[in-house]
Length: 386
Ligand code: PLP
Image (tube, rainbow, N blue to C red; front, side):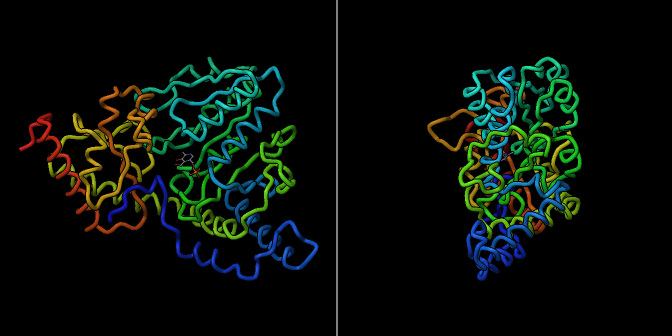
């Protein structure tokens, strides 16, 4: 198997695994600090929180463990919206957000009785000029935007929304799930009122996410998971100490090594592109003109169905970004939002690279993709492949 789907998930790093498996003595409930087992778990959790907060440049009291980025998105977007005054019933998102953000925003406005305003993007995947000033006003509680897109790798600069949010008094929530470990976190740290990420995208454990809510936005925050008051009532529920410890190792490495990781992924992606070009198959890169994560290639193969390409790949594991639900044949909402036609969007495949590919593996992957594209093109007679 040649795994080229690192934006969907990543293997667990050996140091992360060692940390997670090293918790024999820390099985107590971190909330039961009346006895030593609980106390030990509690101090282990506190140390993980400390390490993570330091790595991502926030205060310890601003960081919360969650079960995933999806949970973090719901907590942040709905919690901030519910905490806002009734005069702010509206929420703003970009049209290329992950479903985790779109669904949370939809639920927030349903509860608040407001409406969802969508910032439109252009063919380059960037929010169109004038959209922010048009749609972000004093009736908006929350603006949510990603720092990098999971399907195209296109980077979006959260600082471009900062001014409009500050002027309107709205909270800016940034989905940093794809950019953490692949790009500099500084702009997210500086401009977001809240941001989040996920363990399994950064060679960390599955089922754990990290959420930041800056201090000034915690006042009035309404948690949708208040539970037993853990994590100061912002995210109730007994924390997963093991996953928290693994997340600490993963995020430290992700933040420290992002430039090296980006270089390694780019080397693999460039080699892959080189082999495709050498073969002569017809393709283009979606969002080529925009700043993109080096590890992500969303490739458009004119006239060739993306799902058919995947079905013809024996070794290579990639993704079309379309709904997993086969009953829903809609192509990616992200690509449609960027102005690709239904047919164009159906002819794209996402290849996302990690940090550990061999030259041989990349060459074999490219050969298999070229063979699949040629075979389908020939069968469909859409492209005059020999
Ligand atoms: N946001 C983005 C940009 C993602 O790529 C993903 C996962 O694919 C998520 C959110 C959801 O992450 P999780 O699987 O941790 O819920």
